[in-house]
Amino acid sequence: MAAVEVEALSKRFGRFLAVDAVSFRVEEGEIFGFIGPNGSGKSTTIRMLCGILTPTSGRAAVLGLDVQREPEAVKRRIGYMSQRFGLYTDLTVRENLEFYAGVYGLGAGERRRRVEEVMAAVGLGPRGGQVARGLATGFRQRLALGCALLHRPRLLFLDEPTAGVDPLSRLEMWELIYRLAADGVTVFLTTHYLDEADRCHHLCFIERGRIVADGTPHSLRRARLGRARAGAGASEGRDVAQPAPAAGPPGSEDEVSLEEVFLGFVTPGGGAGGEEGGGPR
Ligand SMILES: Nc1ncnc2c1ncn2[C@@H]1O[C@H](COP(=O)(O)OP(=O)(O)OP(=O)(O)O)[C@@H](O)[C@H]1O
Ligand SMILES: [Mg+2]
Image 1 (tube, protein in one colour):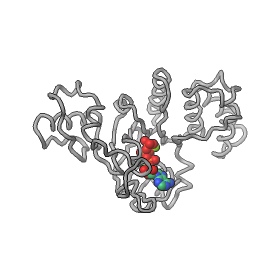
Image 2 (cartoon, protein in one colour):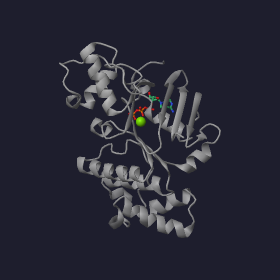
Image 3 (spheres, protein in one colour):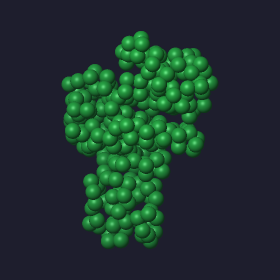
Image 4 (cartoon, helix red, strand yellow):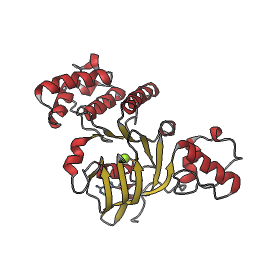
C-alpha cells in the first residue's frame, strides 16, 4: 500500500484552479519532496491530503483512507506541520505540547510521558519552561514538529519546515527528518531550498497546479542531461515531462545542481498565480 495515492486531484477557488488534476504516489518510508514556486499549489494539495480542504474533483487515499469519505480519520492518523503553524506564544514549550497532546486525545498519563519524550526527541528538553514567544525560529520550528509528532503518526506532512531557519538549524531539522524516516515514518515535505530537495528519496515538481516532473533527484538530473545532450527522448524513472534544454554545455550528472534541473522544468516567470498576479486558469 502506498502512503499517499493521488489521482487527478483538483482544487478550484472560485474561477481559479489552484491544483489541476495532480496524480502521484508516495511510498511508505519515503522522504518525499513536493517542490514548486510560490503559489504553485503545494500547500493547497497538502491541505486536501490532510482532510482539511475538500477537493473539487479527483481522488486521494492517505494511509489507505479516502480523504473525502474519511477526513476525520485521516486527521487522526497523520501529523501535519502547517506553513503558518499556530503556536500559542504566551504558553511555554511544554504547555504548547500538552495542549496539542490534548487535541490529539492522549490520556493524562500518556500525555505527560509523550510530551517529555517529544521534547527530548526534537532537542527542546532544556527549554520546556521557556515561553514560545521568545524562541528563535529554529526552535519554534522544532516545537511545531514536536506538536505534529505527539500521537506517533506514520505519515508526516511538513509544509516548509525550514523556512527562515539558519543553516545549522536546517541541518539539525534534517537530522530529525532522517531519524523519523529511519523509524519508518513517511515524510512528505515542501521546501524552497533545493539542497534539501536533493536529500529526498522522491520528488515531484509542481508548477501552476500541475505536476511537471516526478522522479528521484538522480533520475531528474539524468532527464535534464539527456535533454541537453540529445535534444529529446531521454525519459527516465517516473518523469512525466522533459525539462527545457540546458543553457550551458552538459557535464556529468554529479555536476548538475538540482537548482538547474528545477529551473529546466519550470517555465520562466510562470510560477506565481492567484494573488501573486496570475489570472484564472
Ligand atoms: N482559500 C483560498 N482562496 C483563494 N485562493 C487561494 C486559497 N488558498 C490558496 N489560494 C491560491 O491558490 C494558489 C496556490 O496556493 P498555495 O498556498 O497552495 O501555494 P504554495 O505552492 O503553497 O505557495 P508557497 O510556496 O508560497 O507557500 C495561490 O495562488 C493562492 O493565492
Ligand atoms: Mg505553501
